[in-house]
Amino acid sequence: MTRTVVTGIGVAAPNGVGLDTHWSSTLRGENAIRRITRFDPSPYPIRLAGEIDFEVGGRLPSRLIPQTDRMTQLALVASDWALADAGADLAGMPSLDAGVITSSSAGGFEFGQHELEKLYSKGPNHVSAYMSFAWFYAVNTGQLSIRHGMRGPTGVFVTEQAGGLDAVAQARRKIRGGHRLMLTGGIDASLCPYGLAAYLASGRVSLGDDPDAAYLPFAQEATGSVPGEGGAILVLEDADAARRRGAEIYGEIAGYGATFDPAPGSGREPTLRRAAEIALADAGVRTEDIAMVFADAAAVPELDRVESDAIVKLFGPHGVPVTAPKSMIGRLSSGAAALDLVDALMALRDGVVPPTVNVRCPAPGYDIDLVIGEPRPARGTAALVLARGYGGFNAAMVVRSAG
Amino acid sequence: MTTFTLENLVRIMRECAGEDDAVDLDGDVAGMEFEDLGYDSLAVMETVSRISQEYRVSLPEESVSEARTPAELVALVVERQQQPAQA
Image 1 (cartoon, each protein chain N blue to C red):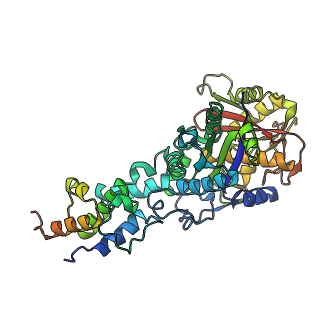
Image 2: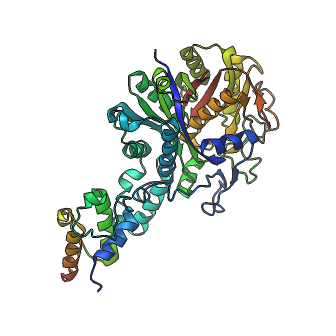
Image 3: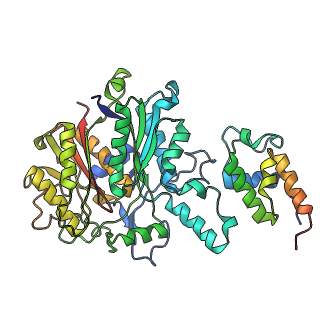
C-alpha cells in the first residue's frame, strides 16, 4: 500500500492565524477563549467563544468577498498557505489529478442568517443570488476547487466534529487511488446568533462567563464546551512522489477508523474505542508505539467518561499522555479534528505534548494521564487523534512522524 | 427620476460582486462582455436584483439574460425606467 503524507499546512485558529503563530501560542498554553466581540452576545445564553482575530480583506480577490461566508474566506486563505507551504507544482499537473475533500458541520451560517433576515424583513427579491451556494455544506470544497483549478475528486463530510478526520481519510483514499494531490481538512465558523441557537440546541455548550472556567474537559466541574471558529487545511500527497520532488514532509496519515454509536437506550457500548482500535490496526502500530493521544474532549461528564474509559481500556490506567489543546480555543466543529492532526504532527516533530489548560486535575475515576498547564517532553513517532461528532459519529486517526 | 448610467452600474457591480483583479472597471468597459469582465451569470443576476431594488424598476429575467455587456444592460434599465409604471 502506498503511504500518504502531509506536505502542506494552512491554519486559521483563535490562538493564531498561520501555523507558526498557532503552534507557538499552543505551546505557551495561552487561553484564546473570550467574550464574543463580533456582535453583542448579552441577549444570548452563550457569551464565550474562540474567535479568530483576522481580516480577510486584501488576501482574496474582491470578486470572492460578496459571495462567501466567513468560513469560506478563512478556508480559501488557509488553502493558499497550505499549497504555498507544500510548494507543489499544481500548474504542472493535469487538473483532474488534484482534488478537494473538506468537512463541514453547518455550512455558511452567518451568510445564511443575513440573507434569511432580508427574506423575512424585506422579501425574496432582496435575498442575494449567492445564497444559492454560499451557505451549503459543500461550499468550501467547491470554492477551493475553483480557486486552485483542482478538478479531480471532490466531496464534503458532514459528521460534525468527526468530519475533520473523515475528510482527511477520504483524501488519503484518493491519493492511494493514484491522484497526485489532495487538499483536505476543514474550517468552520458559525459565531453568529443563528449559529449560537444551533450550538445551544445540542445541550453540550457551557453557559458560563468566565473564560478560564467555561471549558474544562475531564474535570469534575465540566459543564460543556465553548464553540470556536477555524480549523486547518492540509495538502496530502503520495510519500514516494513527495520525496522525489524534494518536498518537506510533516508526517504520514498512517491509520484511520470510523464507527457509529448504538442508538441511545440500546444498552450497548459506545464505539469510540472500536474506532481507535481500527485506526491502530490500520496503521500497523501497537498501543505502546503511541506517544500521545489528542482527545475529543467534550467536557460533558458522560461523554468524558466514555472517552476516558476508551483510552484506559486501550492503554491502561495513566498509560499514555492525553491532551486537549482545544481547551484554549473551544471546539471548532468540523475544523477541530483537522487542527488536532496538525498539532499532533507538530508535537511529534518537536517531541513535546501541548498542554490542556484551565483544568486542575481529571475528575476522580478518570484514570488518564492528562497533560495539564505546561507542555511535556515526549518521545515517540506516532500519535492518536480522537474525534466525535454530535449524533453518534466516532473517528480516530494515527499520524506518524516523517522519520 | 434619475436616469440610470454606466457609472451607476459600475458602482453596483463593485458593491455586490467585487472586481476582477485583471480588469479596470473605470476603463472602457461599456462594450465588453460580462464574462470577459470576470462576472458569471450569478454576478449579473445579483447586480440586476440590486438595480431593481435601488432604482425601483422591474427587469424581467428574459430581457436581462439578453444583455451581454454593461452598455446593453444600462440601455435596458433606461428603457424600463421610461416605461410608465404599471398600475
